Image (tube, rainbow, N blue to C red; front, side, top):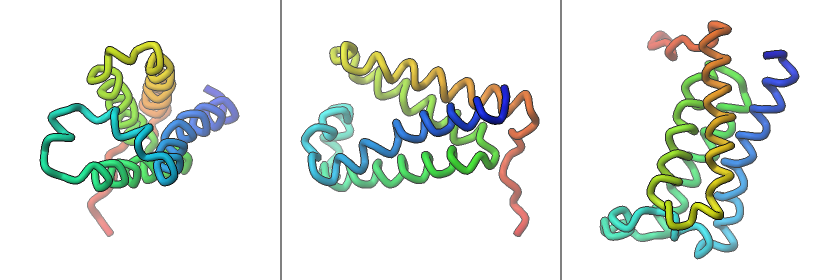
Length: 125
C-alpha cells in the first residue's frame, strides 16, 4: 500500500474512534446503549464505563494515527468493532458501517505485517 493510501486509511479508522468519545461528552445516552447488558449490570456506573471506554478509543485512535507499530492498535480496533457489532446485532441497520471500518482496520494490520511494521513493542527502556 502506498504511504498516502496508508495515511488516508489510518485517518479514516482513527476518526471512527475519535468521534464517539467526543460526542459522548454532550450526548452520553446515545452511546451507553451499545454496551452489552452484562457489562451495564456489572455494577460499574454507566458514565464510568462510557468515559473509560472513550479514553481507550482516543488512545487507540492516536496510536493508529502515529503509524508506530500500527498492527497492534489496528488489530485491537478490529476486535472492538466486531465485538460492538456482535453484541448489538439487533441494531445492524446502524452498525453495518462498523463492519467496513473493521475491514479497514484489518487492512492496516495486514499491511503493517507485510511491511515489517508489526514487531511487538520492546520491553527495553
